[in-house]
Image (cartoon, rainbow, N blue to C red):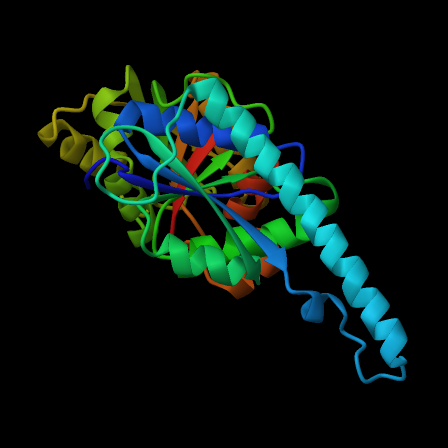
Length: 290
């Protein structure tokens, strides 16, 4: 895969906005990317679901006006975070591809965030999101899952306080799945420059076989000029995600590469799933791909 020439960053008004923008602009500087900061205002009509349910016209107008005011304040806060990060990185504004090197643009639209992120993400090389938290956790998870499952592009999940730099020591969670294979392919720009690469495998049953031996991946990476080490572990199914994180931290990784939702959605809902646990708890950056 080529380097990340175009990067999409959904920007809300939460306290994580600056960290996510820093991560995206830092990557943009490293790979000469164009970074699009996307803020999606909620459609006031969608924010007032009780229209026609016994409310008077005056009450509906008042609720829509309040929703518009709140949306404008959120957009103002998000734009301020973008400008602060852009000035700190000294990034020029650009909206056309006739520029070289790092550039950025601000896009402010109205609609459903998950729909806009998927639509624009499909024509981006990378989507950068922060850990869902606080009051925005539920809508942020909706957007994040939509990006992972539908956009068809890799997603970089940033911790609340991202370390800088990252991508120097990379861990790969390997289970031989198509999703993990795609994640490795998209992570190649990081892997080729990494100081160290560690392959992590977790057997989820006492005597269960590993779906694909890490040696196969190590050989593939070696053909691409990338040396790697392997760490194998065993853990109950319910603890597989926690074990992966423990091993990643233990080997000093600052980036975890993994396939997302490699099992069925029903299994994920019943057992919790590795992906959901990583999203909720990862203290380092994670490059995920479905």
